[in-house]
Amino acid sequence: MINFTGLLCGKLSDGDDLRYHRKTDKPVVVWNSTRRCNLSCRHCYSSSTCEGAPEELSTQEALQLIQGLARFGVPALLFSGGEPLMREDIFILGAEAKRLGMRAVISTNGTLITTLVASKIKAAGFDYVGVSIDGTGVLNDVFRGRTGAFVSALAGIRNLKAVGQRRDCASLSQNTICAR
Image 1: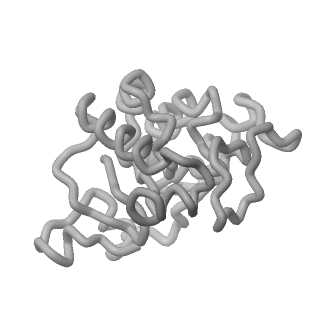
Image 2 (image 1 turned 30 degrees about the vertical axis):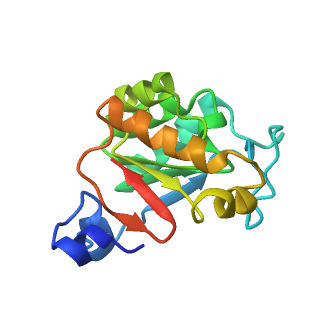
């Protein structure tokens, strides 16, 4: 991941220590917490669909996983997918990761972030929300397999900003606009 804020403005972001100045030998964990997704991205590596997979962890199993990661000393847990916001328990899981001292991050397509969802993200204590965008307008929509995905993702970013989840941020990580 590239922090453009750091490159362009000499300004570090909250996750830079984990990316560039590791103070621990413990891994940052990216967890594909669901295969459910509301989009059909051309570049999807998880074969996501709108239906849940039978092997998806229950809330209790997911909490046990997070507790195990915390005992191991994992400094950060990135919830990915599919679309992690399609897990009804994502706010519970994020809050548990935070309670246990981990940096909690969501990697999302942003299209499901209403003002209510943005408020729940903030209340759960997520440190960072990465909203993936693959170009502007129609180009993004073609990659994401849905007309209007670009506009919906931008609305999601605005909703995060409106609830105070998004602070001063120009950081881009590959194809991701951040909201932290």
